[in-house]
Image (cartoon, rainbow, N blue to C red; front, side, top):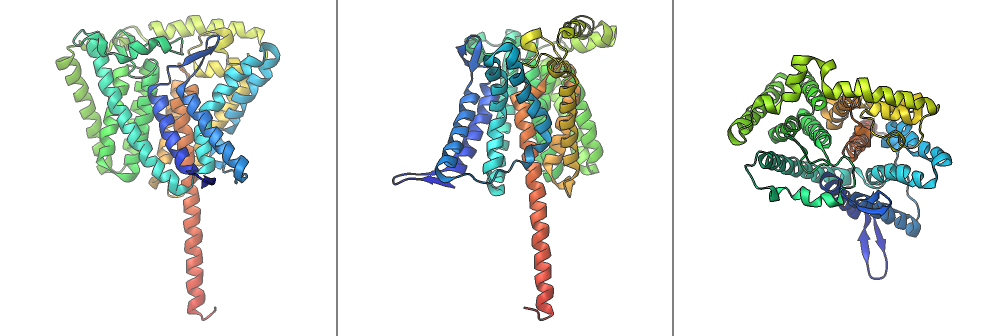
Length: 445
């Protein structure tokens, strides 16, 4: 559809698709950075693109009238999304209207781009868009792998420090936890190690799901690169999730596919071994010290885990006694660092928020089982992989406020809905064709 005037004609849907690609580029490469606008609050490039998309669609509706809203793909996430938007508004009674903009506004901007595409784009446009999104993810995993290796090489003083281009952008960092290098832990183009691991899992899930359905070997190559990003991050929760996803994919795939997946995993570890020992000359005990420490001392003696369990989390729970309904606004603004997704949402809205979170998880899982011929739909596998990641990682991080995860969840739900609609249309068309042929054979016109 186009907005027309005497001199111009703007293809709205094509423009929206292009803006979504730019939005994807922005959250993958520029999300840690922004320009300070009010106090310590920042406007980021993805925010501007989301606003542009919303403005374009709003202008179209104003000039040509409203079109039918296709919101069905968003229904599984609605219980959680409504709480994310409503609780801060209620919290404005205590904290003032600025808090509404800072929390509800930020959440709305994260959900807007895909929501607009769900409303506007046809199945044909969506399939064309997926081809471009796949190319973007391929470029992103390759560039992050190369940059992560450069970060490690600089850390080992093999390469000069000026190659770390993200260091020069640190003055624009919008996140307090901006940390590109932490010892041998690297973060690629993302804000920190956890964000890189999150992207690695999302990309690995996407390409693994595509391979299970389309059986293209080049998808396995990008599974390997994404897995290498996870391994280089040394995020222990991401390691556990990656292992579970690999086991699940091996079990649910046919023997030939399982052997190819297993070979890909072996090659990933061989490449990592060559990279660490030959090029970077890193001792394995140093690189994997966080894992060796758990093996030798046990999980309870691990500094990272014990700090949370014995120190941070009990303090948060004690301070929550002063908030019978939770903090209402994002809890880290009131209580500081929490380091747990589940505890973050419990602190903000107590059991109401936890119920909304798990309701959305259950609805997403249920929706994936409602798809006919699910073994031929990549979004089914993609969403199940994402749910596995969320269930485990939210113990020690909060990926539900990661722009990468929000994009992936909505994108997967969108294509799940498209698959269901295509199946229904194909069945209806086949039924009408069969009925017409029968009527023709009996002489009925």
